[in-house]
Length: 383
Image (cartoon, rainbow, N blue to C red):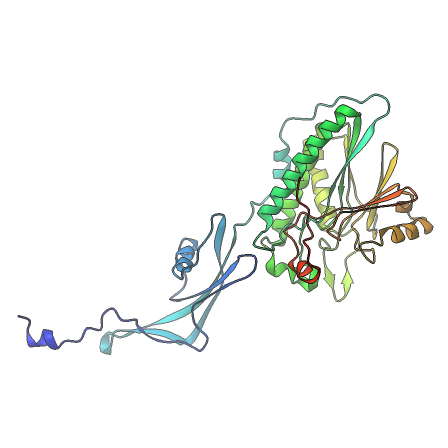
C-alpha cells in the first residue's frame, strides 16, 4: 500500500507550463486565394534551422503539398512573453518567440548567363536554305506574367502552358513547311513576360510566387527555349521585343523609367549575349526598341510587322485608331502591314483597309478581379 505522503502528493507534471503572453500572441493559420498559407507559431527560444520549420507548421495541422516549402519570414520577441518552469529555487524562466512562416510554392532554380550558354549545348542548327519565294512564320509571346498567382495556380502551371504552346506551334510550323516553304520565323516578344514589382503601386509583388530576380531568370530561360527550337529549322529567326508595363524597371514619384529600360528588353539581350558566346547562331537577330520607344518594327519576307505591348492604346478596341495616328506622325510602326500587341489578355483580330491588328491572349493563371467584374476569364486554353 502507498504511503500517506504518496497518496497526498500533488501531480503537476504534464500540465502546460505557466506562461505570460502579450495580447494578440496566439497561433494562427490564414490562407490566401492562391493557396499560400501564413502561419504563426509560438515557441520558446529561437527557431531552429530550415529542417525544423516544416515540423512547427505541420504541428498546427497545416498540410504542405508536394512542391511547396516553408519559409520563415519573421521572428518577434517581447520581454513580457515568457514561460516559467518549476517553482521555488528550481524555477527557470524561458523567453517566448512568435515566428511567422509562409507556405508557398518552392522557388525556381536560379539561372544566369553562363547557365543559359550551357543550356544551349554543343549541338548547332543544321539549316537547309530555301530557294525562291518563301513565307514567314510568326509565333507571338505576350503576358506570361511569370510570378503571377490566381485561383490556386502559379508559375509552375504557367510554364507548362507556355511549353505546351511552344510544342503546338512548332508542330504547326513543321506541318506548314510541307505545304509552302518557310524561310523566316518571327518570335514576337510583346511585353509583360514577368509579373514585376511596379504595377498596382507595387502590390502585385505581395502575391507573386517568385522574387523579381527569379522571375527574370525564368523568362530568360523560356525565351531561350523558343529561340533554340525555331533556330534549328529556320534560315532566319527574328526576335522583336516590345516593352510592357509589368516589366518596367521602376516607377518612382510618378515618373516611369525610359520606355526601353525594360526587363523584357534585358531578357532578350541576355539571350543575345548567350547566343553570341555560344557561337553558331548568326542567323538569329534580336531587335530591341530605340531610346524612349515602346515599339519595334521589323520586316520578314516582304511583310512589315509592328510590335507594341498595347498599354498605349486607350482600350482593347482602339488599336487601329492608335496605329493610324502613328502613320500620320510618320513613325516607323505606321508603315507596318501587321500590328501585334498584347496587354488586354484577349484574342482579337481586326482588319482596316488591309492593315491587320492581332491582339494576343495571355497564358497567365487568370485575373479574378476581371472575372468578378465582367464574368469571364481572360486566358486561352492551348488546343
